[in-house]
Length: 337
Ligand code: ACO
Image (cartoon, rainbow, N blue to C red; front, side, top):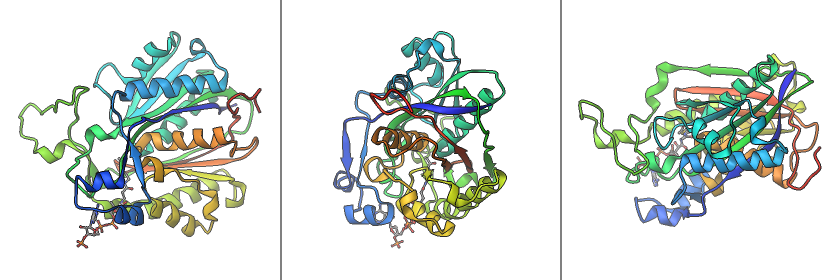
């Protein structure tokens, strides 16, 4: 028994900021951002919130899967930018969808690895028979925790949500590989958060410095970590499941930086065509980047029945993980595959 993705959905905010708009805020240029990151524009919330985007992505994934909200046993949301601390985003999504039979909780803090960990958690519940139908979502409004005066980070991030419905299926179970290295956590931090009204909350002592409210990053350290650890974890998950690189049809990597994706492909000796990217349009949307890309590939019909996909995420913690899956996807308007 395994858990298999049978539908996907996503929600992208309509408002966009291109690199020229960023260059109005900090000393940078379209040329520099494109060359160092691959990002051309990002979508930013206006009236949307992390919850509203998560709920809409979830609704679209249910529709794509042909599954009703009442059938859901579990809703898992990966996010580091929820509107409020309580109630959790997953419970808010439950309320919005009317998924009255679902157990709901968030996976916070794993940031850009969050969706892969949500997938692994859902898959383990399904494989063990605890649940039969699960909705997993990655949703982020990173713009609310971005320091728009810091050119080392504000060029990178964007907002959006992606979702997938998983069902228990007969079939081979692929085991994931997951890692954390708390000793390197200082490379990527966010010490506080904004509430839904944009009011910054201080800690009790009130002594947090202004710049600590936002995502802070040692960009070079995170870059070096990613280009070393992602190829390693991909090799590990292939060996664990007795598969070869040639068995993988597509590598769905966290969309952080075009140069990271290219470096991973090169280190693995795999063609770049097996590494689809959409970060040029959305920037780094943290836990949402992998499910947004999955949904795009699903809607375009790029993912074919029987193909094997390898998901790999990396981010704050530091954390990194990889999983192999064989989805049973339906395109919009399809009778199913
Ligand atoms: N525009 C113009 N110049 C800039 C900018 C900018 N936006 N940012 C930095 N520079 C300058 C620096 O000041 C430096 O100048 P100097 O040589 O005169 O000192 C020069 O450009 C090079 O700076 P680096 O920091 O070395 O630039 P780098 O090539 O490393 O690119 C970047 C920076 C894009 C942030 C890169 O390090 C990166 O992508 N790192 C990984 C980030 C990431 O993937 N994070 C994922 C996790 S995010 C999460 O979990 C929420």
